[in-house]
Length: 117
Image 1 (tube, one colour):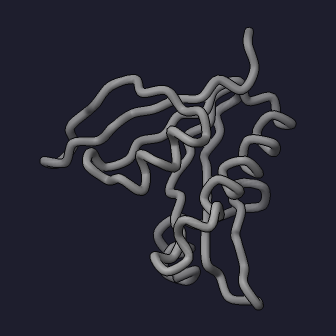
Image 2: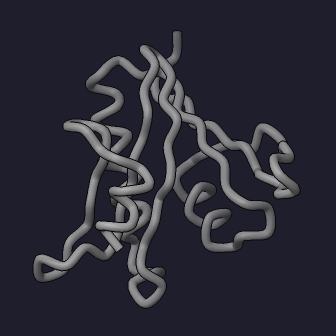
């Protein structure tokens, strides 16, 4: 999983968190930052490790890092109708902004305010 994700979403220092279980990757959260705005995604947890709170912990750790870097707002999208993503981002305090369509896929756009301006 880690090799596949790293090829598709290459990481540089400071823009991702990985959850390990006995040295095996079981979850990943990456982001891109542009000054006070960050775009989170993807957040991936192995199917058999879901509902343990790993996704929430990864997003929480990303929030802490992004706050320390001066980020004020975090945005992300997930496919409409994906209950795991909907639960995760709702539990992490993200608010729905709307939907958008790309290449025939409907995406839900959400944001979380980290610091008020």
